[in-house]
Amino acid sequence: MPLSRRLIAESPRGNADRRGCRVEAGVRHARWLAIARGAVRLVAVLLLATSLPGRAAFPVDGDAAGQSASNPSAPRDIGEWIQRMQGAWCQRSYSGTFVVLASSGAMASSRISHVCDGARQIERVEALSGTPRTIFRRNEEVRTFLPQSKTVRLNTRDASSLFPQWREVRGAALSRFYVARPLGQERVAGYMADVVWLQPLDMLRFGYRLWSERETGLVLKLQTIGSEGRVLEQVAFSELDLKSPVQADQLERLMDTTAGYRVVASTVVKTTARAEGWTLRQPVAGFVPVSCYRRSPGATNAAHGVLQCTYSDGLATVSLFIQPFDPQHHSVATQMTGMGATQMLTQRLAPDVWLTAVGEVPLQTLQLFASQLERLR
Image (tube, rainbow, N blue to C red; front, side, top):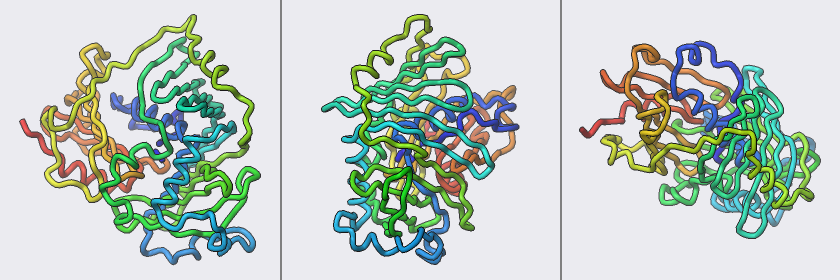
């Protein structure tokens, strides 16, 4: 996944938004994209993992429990599960509607059409709730249409798989931090799915409970669960067509039709944390750097100077946004907030530096990243 998403992009964030945190809009937009790109970056987050009583904490319907063991096509370890779901995401065409529900009651829904045509992947994701927007992706090229402002935003994003960081961080030994536990089978959106719990082996990451369509491996549903078994967030297809008649050429024509819209190109420049004068004193267990970008001088004043460094363990992702401290928009006090499975920490890292840490991880993980972040110059 990948899991983003992050989603519920249009839900109010209360004081965090009113304080004008300059990266917040970008964070929410990135979360929306993260969920959309996987047609459900369906990752289920279960904070406690080792202290939960196994299957009893996650019952499945009827006599489904135990059937997975007799399914010869069911993967046997976490690597096989991820490969199966990655393959379905990269090779299947489908269309459907998926819904995201947070524990706060906030809900968002989107309609997706995803087409695989040889080496070309193209998809369209339309928000059905909140502010109107439609996102098109052609391989790594992303275009976001905002009809109210008549704007199209162009950027690139590695969304070539359900969990795009998985291959990059394979050396982090995913099996050291998660274990796959089959939980049986259930029906989702009319399809039978194998249910698996990707259980975390420490307290620095959430787990993932996923429903993987039995024949294709496509992920149909995700639940993110907190330390006391409370569902923090659920993402699921409410309707799905695995034989979608949508054609790649049809989606491309829609994607390339920008007449009447103002086109705004991305202004980010690829870099590294060390090249920008930053490092982690000690790495956070399992997380490795996967990307780092800085806004170019052509960016808007609000975004100018923002550095985004992303770390992943292959499933979970943490983004660190580092920017100049602005007393008119930033609080002196450290703040911690959460929305569904997404947690956010903001703090004044130095007299002239403001940090925003965001991720689908426990707050203590964000605190650890913040405490280990060090300026080199």
